[in-house]
Length: 91
Image 1 (tube, rainbow, N blue to C red):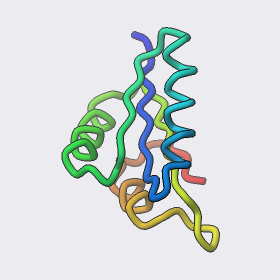
Image 2: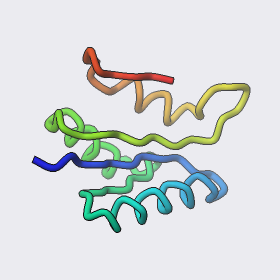
Image 3: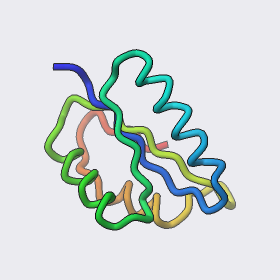
């Protein structure tokens, strides 16, 4: 099975979205399965949460603006909703 590469982001001013799309473009040129999700879209966010919970063979990218060394609340909420495993990395 080929690993999936979901990319989740919040981008109030568009710069984080640009980075997410650039990563997606690079992965697509390598024939990777990529999805890009704006976490401000509730339906897309829920679909991504279901996908993450059902697929153990993925590498999840999460992009966020950072204020006072903390990702924005929608991103932190999304991270907190993810299942924990021995391979989970939160930085």
